Image 1 (cartoon, rainbow, N blue to C red):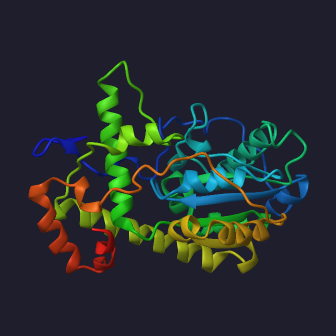
Image 2: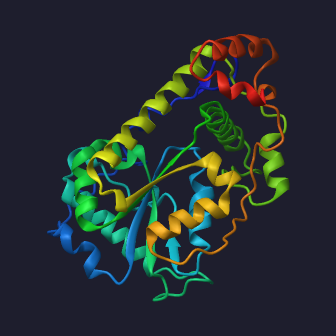
Image 3: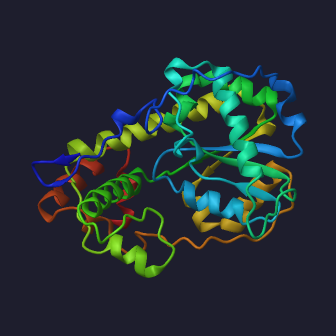
Length: 307
């Protein structure tokens, strides 16, 4: 949506909470009975999920995971066409069936470095609003019983998460109105990143930015508490995007240990969209000072280090 007051994107994903894109109800199909204790044992590979919020750096993480020769990691698979599900009207067993089918589909889809049959570990990312918070503790208990590992990614700097989210939404809106251009949420060249980064100005109204940051902080805390309360400590790991970016080899070694594969140096072709640009320059000049003052008086004052 556009903010008519300043012609920038209204940053809200409230309409997408607890529904998959497309909101197609596929719950009418035949449901298979699941015995969670045998889900992992029946497979020849270890299963895992990456829990994350939008624009938290999750594609960076999944690319790194997928670069390991014995790991196949998909992306936002539950948001793919044909995989949508209205889980408000679906049971947890039906949701678990869909997860299991997705694991199998990814396992059967080869990549140049992971032919079919070579992957020892298979996983994909699931956003909070794709069943994680909806099924909550019951989902965590099922995952733990099935031995499915969980990696929880958090982006500590919520201001940069806001910038990434708002910039991405605005770029989508701009490109939608131009048939000669295509939105690219995950650029793989410096030139592609510059097309999104340069000349990008978003709303810096404190009444918009701070609530976004607070909402994301609350969501991260809720999911972290669910994981630590209902999963065995050997079945999950927390990772911060900032640590992953600064200490990639160290953090990936820790995650590979969780997944039971040998640590290797892995890489991604992705370019960081907002690297090298001062934070304040994303916001309209007449909004920068008010936003800075609001941040100084909040729990997020530390994010001004890169202001």
